[in-house]
Image (cartoon, rainbow, N blue to C red; front, side, top):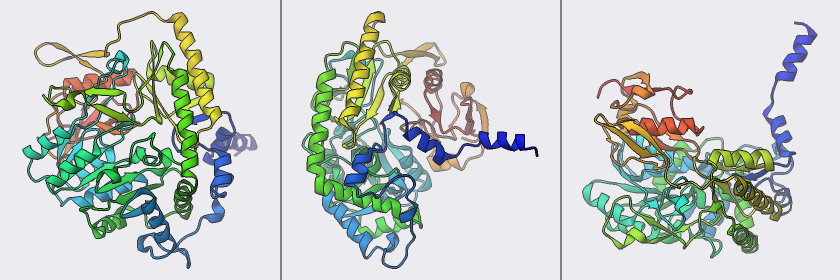
Length: 532
């Protein structure tokens, strides 16, 4: 091989560490996870240099004498987990080094028997579906409400899912005997909080536990501006992703067992031993411990400052004519997709004020995200069809909020000079239902009429064959198909594929949304169950 060829090959090689260093030295600002936001001042001064500069090889050890063992914690790791439990108000807390996914899998297994039955929110993370598949559970679904507030953009082009209605939990439990556990996601990826207290009371009246995937709410309960955490509302098991909204490394999380949890510690520990890595990173565990220490010692001051910055940002962008922020808690109403005949139909709900859900007239979510990235070097957490999410945390700086505010002001002015008023309504696509052409709103996340033909586990083990997605109506899906982020399935194995679903997926693909789960990465083929 000539020196010239060797030289060319060396130039073409890409090394992750080098690329990360290059990116982090740029002026790109992160309005996304992880919650430490690469804030060097906070990391160095407040976290004692645990993360330091570059890769922390110097503190990467294994279970040597004096450093305890996560799977049999008796000393320093047990002390750290007790500090976490004390901070959050749990009976006990467990370090999760495999992220919240590990905690979700362990929690579902701890609360169910093999081939049992689960009542779960349809907008749960894919990890809950994977637990149902591995446990061979029969799934019964709770569908989130739909938002309806004063701004028509949140009913149309930027439509989002609302909370889980407590009365729907009651109905589901009455109609489906044998349910062993209720699982909900609160807050949602968009920051919407369900009435956990009422749902916990309802579940407990039926003598079953409640699991709350509160991955996006690890910061709840530390300031009155934010909602209370689900442990305080009676949830039995709660999962927190520290890395999402607090200063901690990606993949670090906590599983909490509530003070009056119906699930005993031994069952939780049993399944954590199965799903948690047997080689837990001491770098990650040190990061968790320091994060808990930071909140305990300086949380009041940090959250006060964080709250003022969010409030000021919201106040200073409220006047914008063509930029819309989803209102913070106490100002958003929701309505059921069907008239439930209850007072809950127009109940005010809570939204995490730290989640900046932003929509812009005449711009799709992808277009807005691209402008923020290209023109202002601001990277948002997620771009949906009609909006973007800018995820904030106590590590966000005054300068960061100022950059986002100024960018939105400039974009608002740009829209004002080019904007042509149009009717704001939910975008639709056309499909054929076997009798006539029909339309469906693309942003309605879930079809309540989806038919479950078999359990997820049975479908996953069925003989498969591959067909064109466009020709798959009437077939039973053998795959998960979901938007990522956030990883909520549009269809799961065992459900019948409909013309409506195909139209929705194809519309999302045309808009450039990331469809994942299909074995065919082009998104044109789908595996379906051969025998139904």
